[in-house]
Image 1 (cartoon, rainbow, N blue to C red):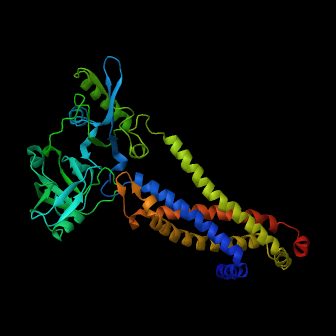
Image 2: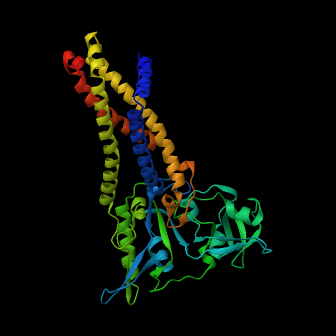
Length: 420
């Protein structure tokens, strides 16, 4: 019976090509747009390598320094290293805390020792806890050691692309390279990182102890941001309370200025939408905005399909009346209409999936741009669960939009149906 319905549905598609194409395209466009929007949301908020702990990670990325006497705003920037060491590293609610200094506006020149091969590379100055919070795929070697970090030894972890550009191979552990003419020893090589992993991303990672960076405004302001991995059972609010207490203790030691970490620590989603800003992150506004967009994207094709189904039912009123006259029940007719619509939804869903790939590929220069620049397109960005959820939601809406007209038509008097 089901096979017969499918054959009849395919035949009806062939007989009503224009309406069928409109139905399929309506579903495809809805799924395509939903996929693109949700994919962009997922890659900015969900956990993936190397940022596998996004759900347990909080961020302190900015600080405001104010005058102690007049509370006048003096500076607003990233954190100074003294503030990091006194307020972030000692947090008891943290399993690990890492400080990161990545100047996205001033890359360095990485070069081979003979100077024949060069590559402009982005550098991340960090610590040993960085490698505990983020999980990299090491092709060879490993991260710089705690001893190397403490001693300020010039060890470097480089990405696979940097290794290939300078040496033609990723098996380069133990060899030397130069960063702006300063020699570094390569201790590890990792797979390239997506720019969507904005905190972990770089092309070369070195200890921040190789440079002298005490910050300014009595150590409050500087160029560091902190990622805090929460201990199991510790909430963000508990961490914030402890962090504010540490900041108060720090401010008690300063002479003329005081630090304010604003609404931080921020969660991953808050950090994405501006948790480190002066005004904090408005999650309610974000969810309302996304909800309205998705609702409109689903409502338009649903109304479209409802009208198309009603038009199709009116053209088939005589046929449905004859079928009912020969014993077909309302349920049988309703199921036939829904099965036809399910075939259209399936075709539209597959087309929508293909269109979402095409949209991400063709519009990558606009969609796939982060604060770190352009990033590449990878199949890892396409979440099967997201597609299934969008497809099922469209299926429910389509069945609803088709079911109401079909239910109304199936309840008409047989004589009225035959007479049209």
